[in-house]
Structures are given as C-alpha cells and as structure tokens.
Amino acid sequence: MGADLIDGLVVVGCSRRKTVTSRPVPALELYQGGCVPRLRDRLGADAGRRRQVLVLSARHGLVPADAPLETYDQPLTERRARALCRPVRHALTVHLAIHPTCEALLLLEPAYLQVLGTPPVPVVHVITDPVAHFGAAEKILATWGWA
Image 1 (tube, rainbow, N blue to C red):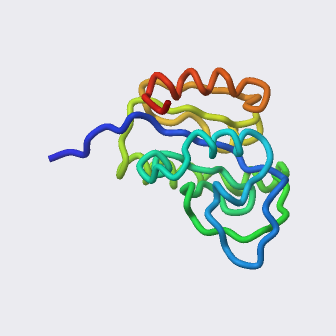
Image 2 (image 1 turned 90 degrees about the vertical axis):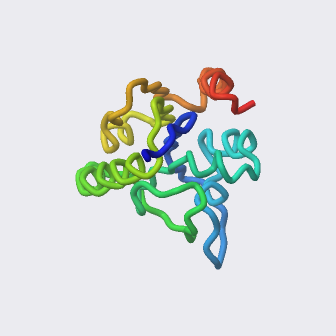
C-alpha cells in the first residue's frame, strides 16, 4: 500500500537573525528573521503540519522544522550554494519519498531557490520575497486547510 498524499510541503529559507542559545532548539524556533516567525505562529504546535515544513539552512542544508540546531553564522555564499545543491536535492527526494505530496510552497529568496531547484511535485508555488508577500503564502496555506 502506498503512502497517502499530504496536504502540501512548505520549504522556508533560514534567516540571519537567530535565537542565541547554548543548547540545540528546533530549526523553526531558531530562526527569528524573514517570514519564519509568521510561519511558526501559523503552525503553532501542530506536529503533523510541522512535519510538512522543511528549512533550507545555509549551514545544515535541508532540515525538518523540528531538527535540533544550535546558533551559527553561515552566509549563503556562491561557493556554499554550489556545495549545498546536491545534498539538498537528495534530502528533498528522500523527504518526498517518505512524505509524498501534490503541492509545494517555496518561501525562498532567489539564491536559496537555486540551491533547492524545482521539487518534483505537480503544483509548485514560489514566493521569492516571502517577507513582503507572506499574505500570498497565507492564502495558499488556507487552501490546504492550514487556517
């Protein structure tokens, strides 16, 4: 029996602003900039929806929303972006094999979008300025029932 399709996959980029911590915290809690706080507020503690969120980190690559991470400083340079492409795309393939979906929402600035590439799902929504256009993301999430 195949896996059931989930409502959607969200991939959000990391941010420069992070929680300063001496112990690992979930990725979605670590990042304090960009659209991450608004996405986090929308998800709350819903474990099912949080499993449908991946964070694209300049240091760690593509990680689940609840992956434990420590504070770091790693800009996404061109060299770092090239190094991340293969492992990030592999991680996405693995995630989609375990959690298939028919839609993806990419909340990624252009440099991060190039690292990820286009997910192999039928419908891909791309918002390259997720801070300015988070309202558009909220409309998509609402169609998925993420009220």
